[in-house]
Length: 127
Image (cartoon, rainbow, N blue to C red; front, side):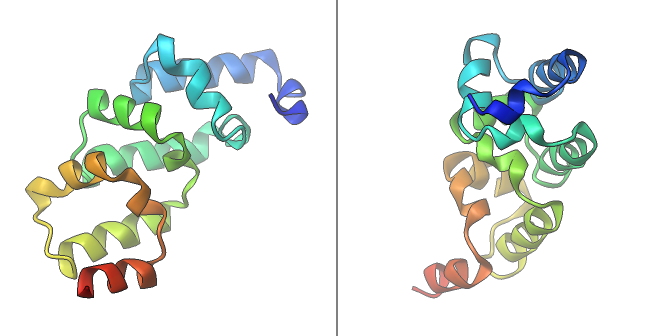
């Protein structure tokens, strides 16, 4: 792991573990994999991660179980700025023509697209 992670207080690590397991829905079996993929996930504050989880559940229509599985495959998701997630949601709905009902399915199938730039997504949609 990352040495800076070692400096985190045990209580903070326990709070983040509880958050990932209970709020996000990550399975206990995949927890280690999730936190080791981008170590900076452990350095993110819960105050910054909570609104992103809310956005993915409420605005993208993901269930907690779907979000948990998504985080197991693509843990980097919670490192993206909230504004970026909202911008990608708007793009998918308004420009790409994804229906609100299908939004969660699109993100489940290709979570990495939320990390792309809007410009590269526009090129892919035009193609």
